[in-house]
Image 1 (cartoon, rainbow, N blue to C red):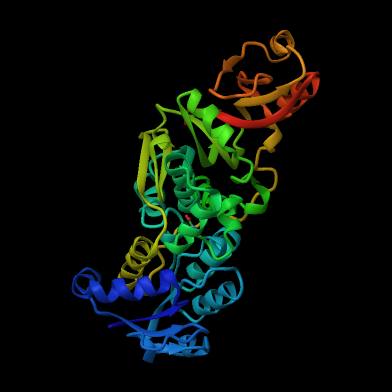
Image 2 (tube, rainbow, N blue to C red):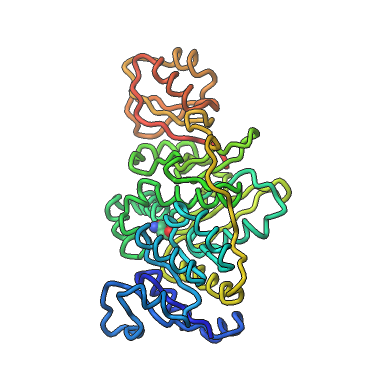
Length: 410
Ligand code: HSE
């Protein structure tokens, strides 16, 4: 029998206990031993809960319990999750987490501690909710040099965009529904401002490219500035707006990485990912393009990924098989102003600026959306860097920029 301690009895933690109980027989068979929840750490009370008798408010109850060989961390946040996980690994326990902030900030250090102690630090649930992506990326695609990863990595914002476009739901109502369904972060700005997706693309890039990447070093733009006019402009181009996490290995070895709303063409697979679903597209130099798709958030889908890791940890309870990556490397990220893309620009104009548009931007493609004000001008630029784009926008006299969105296929 392997004992499990769960830290954090919220949406995901309670889902983990539920899945372990719901599928106990088949999990025992797959793990080769019984897996039993021994203690659950949470500061709240859960009167009448089936696991009420296992609840504790003291982390030491889990740390000192020798029957607990696997600690599940589903508390979220950096502190005290980091301190608890570190102590658990140093006490020779395996740790499974769904906490993307923890992995994105402290992954290299915690993986190293796990290695030194011949234990595991697993985190499949930290990216893509229920989608198996990290282990397939690290192990099944190991033969490849991964050159590019692009994904819809936040279920809440994808769900919200969908509700707003398809059902004309307001931003606030769509967010409230995502919160009710257990998709949104405790602080929803993590979803809306792109930080959650940013942590996830950092984890994917670290696994694929071998060095830790800190979220604070990565360009991150959320959904706040996306308007219904932008959505309609994208529709006029037979395209949609999606919040994309993107990482690309450049020829000089540096990584171009960022999170931003992007106008995607119909032929792009990510265009068709709706609702709370996530998808991750990986380009390998042997395999070509591979796509991973599934539910990106929610109680049981996320618990599915956590429990998968728990079973793996139970099978390798004293043997390190976690991935490793090196610490962050200075100068390894391409400054965002040098990253190239085509852009969809919308301007409010005082006069006819089309001759100047051609002179400044070159060969552009105009976009006409129904109901646009007569003085609005929208066009797609050729591929250019962010820095050059800003210089060109400044040169265009008589026109005020309304919005600027990256455009392309992935
Ligand atoms: N808030 C996150 C999302 C939860 O919506 O994707 C899963 O990480």
